Image (tube, rainbow, N blue to C red; front, side, top):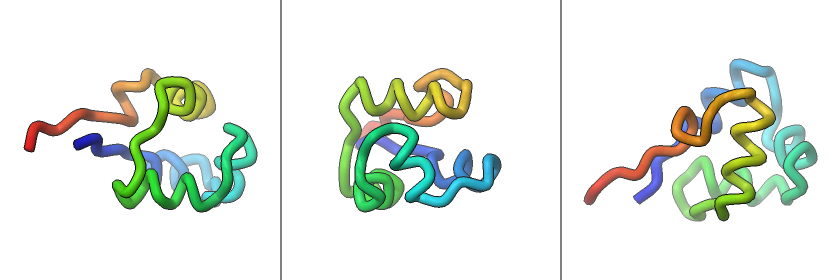
Length: 66
């Protein structure tokens, strides 16, 4: 399972889901699904999100053993 800190970073940057979605080229629903753990990002999407927040992918996404 992949856990993420997207919501935390969005709050830090004062971005809505729609703001972040527009910046990385996906729909707002995709960001919501990522935040709620219903969708795992492609490597490209994870990279683009991390780049927006100027952090590494590992700072936002973590793999958790179930």
